[in-house]
Length: 330
Image 1 (spheres, one colour):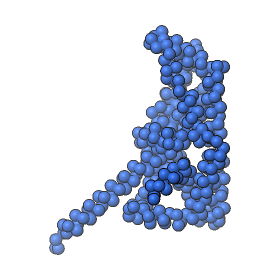
Image 2 (cartoon, one colour; image 1 turned 180 degrees about the vertical axis):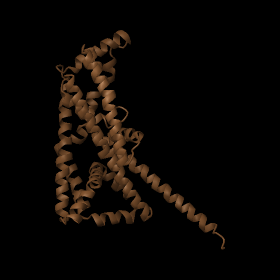
Image 3 (tube, one colour; image 1 turned 90 degrees about the horizontal axis):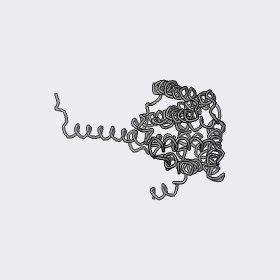
């Protein structure tokens, strides 16, 4: 029955997981309003819903719509990217004997990207339903927070102290994957926008948004994107701009990335880059662009559950040894 219900609710996984993420992020603020300020539970929950919608949902949807519109313009003949690809193809044909090098790589990029973003923007009805269920769950998770958390501890498949440890680690993992990586990606996108503006590149804000999304991949990131754009500048005969952007990306942006990661890891949980990469690869097919966040979060939760399970198993083995081999009386 449980497996059947999970299968039936698979279309709501984004709403459920989004509610859990928002609950974890805003829980301290909610408790501050209710316990410290004496606000009513319903009022506090509604304030958080409105705040999260303004700060998170509206900007994310707006950026996604902008990316979709720009991707549509990429397929038109008047967009400069065709000139860049033609120059790269000409260079690859004369030096690497691969005249259709770019075409073979980017053939399905437009199709894939337009399918990726509509996975959360497929229709107004889907958006409305996803957000409605998400905030419906979030409202009752907050207004019945004590009963909700007590039920989680009561039905958790391990001891209470391990359940509390899991809750704390789950909070840290969520902060690290969502807030920590979000701050890093946003900062890289802003810095990349500034660099493109300095060298006079077309549509720096759009490419900065692309850099923000790409920055969720720790191996790729904005420094790699800066090298690609510096090559395009070289092909256009803009030598100093290409040199500046390459140095700016690999020196300055990489340094800021490492500095922010070190600073965030001191305050939050340290998420291994391998978890992020595997989580993104796993999450994008399941959740679309939201998989950039949800994939690493789910993988971190799974590894944390394995750790708790191993701790429980070791404790049970130790208890069995104590029962079978009691210490002799002194």
